Image (cartoon, rainbow, N blue to C red; front, side, top):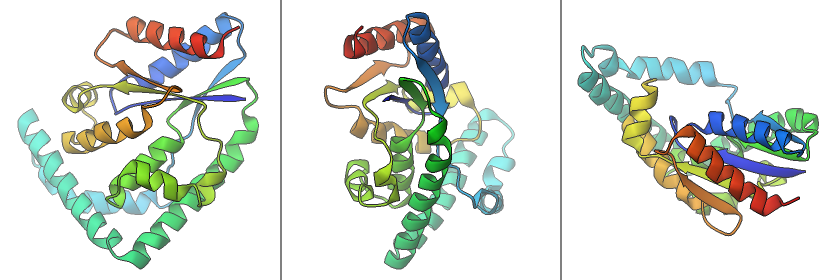
Length: 226
């Protein structure tokens, strides 16, 4: 089984491209399937409640510019709280232990259902690493090495990686779902850690959907051949 990882910031069109790639590979005679496996913490309700308590500035916004400013301010409050807590070594250790075990548990439940020769992953292990790298203020490539010794180190790593590059400002304008620009900028930089090497590629997310799909498909075919 070959894992093909496809990701990028919110608004880059990764889900559309992952689904189109899987369909196109199947049409070409390759046995392919689409899968999604981003970590969703079991304590999400508690996290959302804390965010609501902190998210007062965006709720009082009366126009798009105030909303954008408010979302960034709310994100800063939430990030500051996380960083202060996770800067305490024992808390950071417990958090990463919980996160890696919880994500690996989800992987163990779903991965046996992957039956295709080529599994197209829309969000996967590297997204988890980026999430935690931002949480614990660590470079993603450094944390990636550390996590190889954790539960998630048992997960199959992507064989091929595709990162859709999109400026954070454009991603924000496309989604407008409450995700602040500053957070998208953090993620935009982090994805570069997983976009290098002969088995990874980057594609311009400002191109049309069909142009992006053609670029990705051509590269994949060159890699897997037939």
